[in-house]
Figure 1 (cartoon, rainbow, N blue to C red):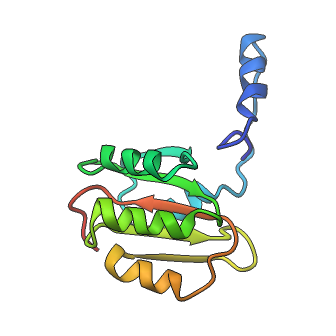
Figure 2: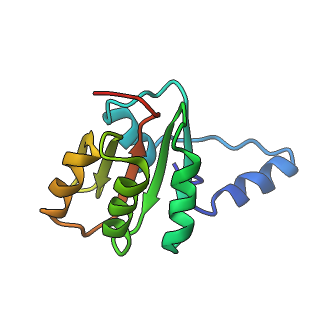
Length: 143
């Protein structure tokens, strides 16, 4: 499903401007795959793509979703995932439920959902290589 977190939307926009029909063919989409397997609410969610590379900007973003009533889905790079796990723990707190997917739709896929207090140490004990998709539960959500 090109067009999700890539520049494919430009092609779809150009077609729309010219009155051309775009026919989507569903395919692998890590954001939707993680959301559907996460156990988190899917009735309302927001996909935000990749967050800013700077820690301060990521923390500011996390502060904006402290009281969110929707699931927030995003991508994070293997180069920043360890720092981002710590930032989520610091800003959102240990009870916040999060799902982290690694290498989703690929051979070495893993998807884990838990409160940050247990999820962060478990992830840090394993491999933090590959592409990551993170789904953050709404405030107050419990497994």
